[in-house]
Length: 239
Image 1 (cartoon, rainbow, N blue to C red):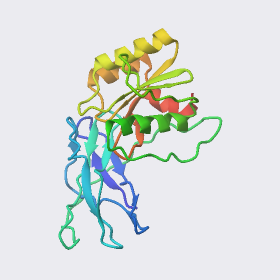
Image 2: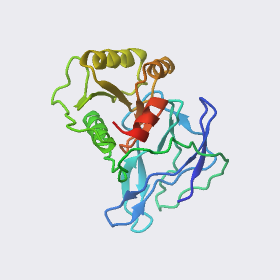
Image 3: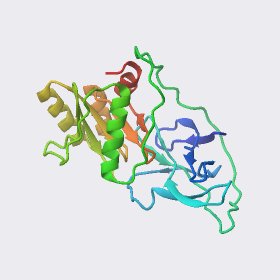
Image 4: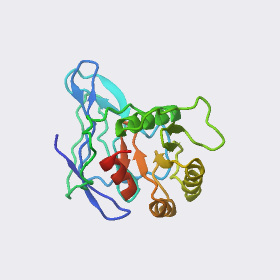
């Protein structure tokens, strides 16, 4: 599938974005039609209604709701990719085009190569925690436990040698969340990992870099993306 050039207005990085493909009930792969040339929108406040988009299957004409395409820039900004609206007859309006290279992550050097990660679509806050748990298991963590009720410590997931927090709110994760996770991990003599749906405040990301806490941003497809060097290293080497 052809990629779309995307420019991050926050840090100036250029990316080549390929939209996710979903299986239509008819069996045909379906992807949201992207608008070339339209500016991307940094997500600073989430609403569940804005996070879904109508997509029509080109094979059978069926119309379904799928997660709105998003790109997690390494600077921590989450960008919403413009999508052509579905017209009554399924004929999308025309659009334009610009350009740019993609971000190259660290190469994977884990001892045991992993299969492709299979995400789960996020529709609720609980889904976000479940998606993070799947990802931790994919990374190689054992005994990943998701408590039925969130404890006062705000720790959403525990695994062998690890605790994780999943921020499913509609605003970027703040500095206090990073520091609280680090203190909880320090007291338990384990590592800490943070997942966020809306990205991170600049001071929160800077503090996480200094404390070597891996930060991930998740879009509604349920696929975490690393946004700092500790997260890149975790993916590369595993637990």
